[in-house]
Image (tube, rainbow, N blue to C red; front, side, top):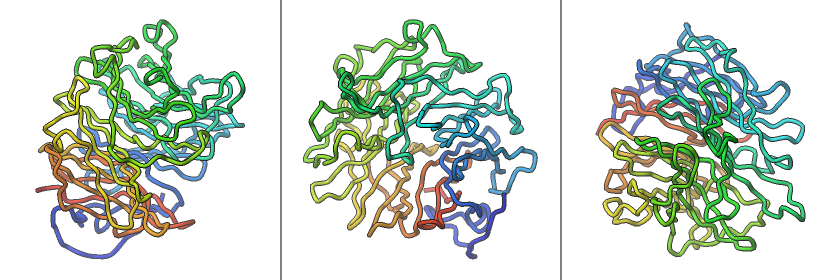
Length: 421
């Protein structure tokens, strides 16, 4: 897959492009699409997935941003003849690569997974997995939104959380259903999870919910984040829930299993139920101390969107040491912000990436926040594009995956930034 160059500079300023990465600071592909998910392995090599039209490609680059010729670049679909959207790449302890995403075929929508060997070859033992859902599920009109995510447990079991949009009927008027799957390392449903089914349905406060963000704490308890609303209401509530490793709701977390996140003065999302988007909560991250970071966006009264970052204590209480216990709202004049992903630097700083929309144009957004919730001066939203995911290499370089350009000229791009203080 061909790449192209950009500019020339030798500046090395924290927060700026690392010109020693890739070609003058980035890797840009010549095909239309986006780099949707990225991770680095124990050698700091970068593994990432590209969404290209109706299929995806999995590839690996060396730490400095040059292609790893020892890796078999893969062009794949989760199912033959489907439209595939990769959302999370996970690196197992045995160096196998798990790719999670969404698959749509003949009006049938499913979360899906496929696994590859360390050299890029297909793991035929695992195969391609398409997970069961309700018969009336569809991807709605928001295909490009993240509806599936996942993580690995310590025992290498696989958790996949997904939100289905449903064709409503008289018996099931609710427009969404969220489901958490647990898979054995070989890809089979774990019958020890969810009372033998291998999955549970996520219903925050027993209401239809939008949840596709999942991580685990050190004791293997499961953190799920998303939002919910009562029927006929427009304002949704962000909620984090905790489940036992076998799938039961952990009533010791928050308030009887749930921790609600309230943004004072937030404007309602004035959309009918079938058009509600799930991304007001886009990512959950569990720190090494088991505190829980939640990212997304909030609707401001002036109809602009502010980026949202919240931290909870390990037990679900609001963390008073982060922004005085309040949600951190990041706003920019004339921009609608949305955080898409985040990660931690070795020094604990929180790197948040996403999109700033100005005059209908998507601009790349890159922020950095201290452990106390102080916003640093790393705002970058000058260039058209989108930041979808981020990782920090062991030596501190911040590597962001996304796309650059506008309209039909959008191309997958990987940027390397200097991440030192």
